[in-house]
Amino acid sequence: MIKGFVFDLDGVITDTAKYHFQAWKEMAAKELNIVVTPELNEHLKGVSRMDSLDVILRAGGKEQDYTQEQKVALATEKNDLYKKLISHMTAADILPGINDFLTDLQQNDYPISVASASFNAPVIIERLGLSYILDKIVDPGTLHHGKPDPEIFEKAADLIGTPYAETVGLEDATAGIAGIKAAGMFAVGIGPKSKLPAADINFDQTGDISLTAIERAFDRIRH
Ligand code: BG6
Ligand code: MG
Image (cartoon, rainbow, N blue to C red; front, top):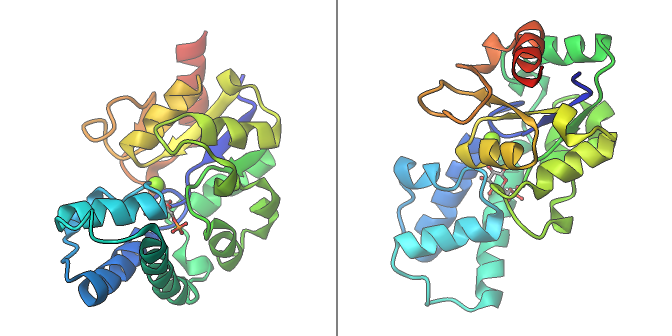
């Protein structure tokens, strides 16, 4: 039986990828003389802030050019730009279908938590008007490994006290689906099967998510 749900944030609850992209692009153009292309941006999704900077520096052939201290300053500059962009977010930025799905989960007494690599997740959740989830967000500062490691999903399930085998994880990234599966959880892919083949069930977009379809698929696979 399903006992609870663990959500990725970016690309599942809201689309902050465009803001991360804009902030990295601006900072990299100004400080590094590196162009962050949409293709390069694809490699930043779900990746931690410092690891994202390393990906960008490597793409520009500058991975040896900066000290750790300088890299922290660059990442901070990007984060300051990012914080300005997300300060305008409101409940209108919740992706289609998610509000209805969250209501469905509440009505069915399913606990939920958030497994996001972002240190900005609490601010975003608050701006989206979903403050009731605030105490159920994994602190990325406590993690030893990023996705695809299962750690963040296990910690998210621990926050709501659900056994991993009876927890459902929702993700839009390949590394996230891999982490959910490695935790022994049931994986819901937001994106087509062709993009997320390892998911247990796929919805092309958030507007297609159905609790009944997830419950049926879970029962079919687990029993
Ligand atoms: C992930 C995003 O959710 O969080 C990444 O997909 C981002 O793009 C990472 O780098 C860390 O976010 P933040 O807000 O702590 O810089
Ligand atoms: Mg995501």
